[in-house]
Length: 196
Length: 218
Image (tube, rainbow over all chains, first blue to last red; front, top):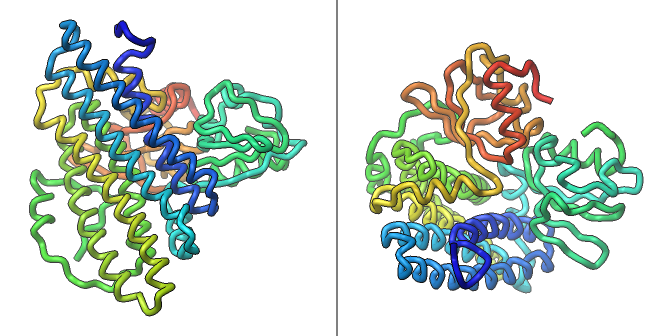
């Protein structure tokens, strides 16, 4: 256990891993929906990952100094995190394309659409079964295959929502998953079906 | 001829990536869109494969990651050639530059996967990395298909594995062979080993189904 902060080395590595993957998804969605707000979030997350990585280096070295971690293990942890950092940088490069004042080439959207994993954006209507429930209660990911990567609630945005995140009528969900899962999610959000 | 890489039964020979690396790049008229789509698909799969290789200490998956990484370099080269051929005006150049930047980013992601794989070969890391990766929110699991399971001889698309459980099948091991990124038409067989990614509850359901304890996925 680390002495200087509540987060252990393991926690920080995993946060870097999860956030970097989220960033790639967000970056591709920003292009697909020509959405600069999401693209800017990718930039903010990149700053966060830089900070996490620096913190990790310090914590890891501290644990080696305290004799709690071997040099080999410390190197392995730092290198795994470095790969996550590289992925985060790549996501930022993708988001950068959206933030430039140049109209996107239609091929970009087409390629993202035609991938194995599709992105979708749905508005939750008043009559939807999704309203006033948390993602955990709905088990959306395990029941539809669609993972919510971001959502817009009025003027507020939420990135990488967790199981305690509640869905309200009017929320806009950005999700990722297989093509037939997309259809199911659209029907659920539109109130066309109640069967999750 | 380019080797098809996804959805087919194959065996990645040791050091196949080296042969691929030094094979000549020929100008083939492929569309920029096709190249970019393939690059995006590889960039998403290769990270999961790299983490799986480390998690299960599996050198065969690592070989495939190396192969895909080299393949990505070539795709990136090809897409640059194609983009140049397609440029006629200043506007074309501006827009195609954006495409090349995304392609470059996809390539960087595959380099990161190569970097993860190096951990497997170079470092005597012991169990610390698998220990950490096991705690991830979206975890990677291995499941064997028992012959009692209703999944045997069924198409993945008909079983709707991903939409019913949220588990994405990254790869299948069948005896000595592998299927990477299986598609809806891939047929599951008894004794296949599936490498899947997703949340724990989806995993539990899928495991019960593949072990024959559950008749249907829903």
